[in-house]
Image (cartoon, rainbow, N blue to C red; front, side):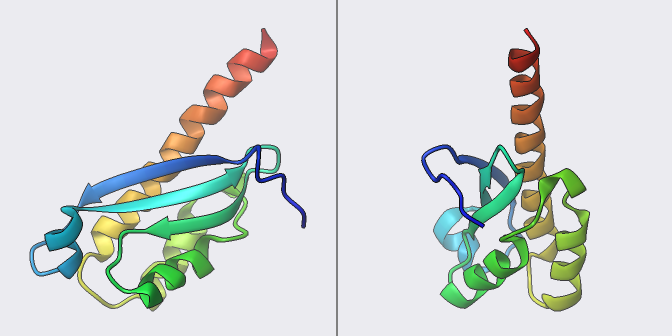
Length: 115
C-alpha cells in the first residue's frame, strides 16, 4: 500500500520504566511512537526507546501495518505473548498512551471536519 508520508502524523505515548532496565538509565521513561496515515488509520512506522535495535525492530514488526480503527489491544496481546523482559507493563502502557493520543487527534479532526 502506498502512503503519502507528507501527510502522516506522529502520536507518542510514555510510561515510567521499572528499576533495572538499561533504558531507564538512558531515557527515564519508555516512549512509543506511531507514525500513522490519518486517512487509513494505519500505522506505517513505529519506534520506541529500547536500548537495543533488536527490541525496537520487534515492536515495529508488531505495530507496523496495524489499523488503529481496530483499537490497540490485538498488537498488545501479540507483544505480551512474545516479550519476556523487564518493563512489559511500562511498554504496553506507553502503547496505550500513544493510541489514546491518536484517538484525541481523531476526535479533534472529526470536530474540525464536521464544522
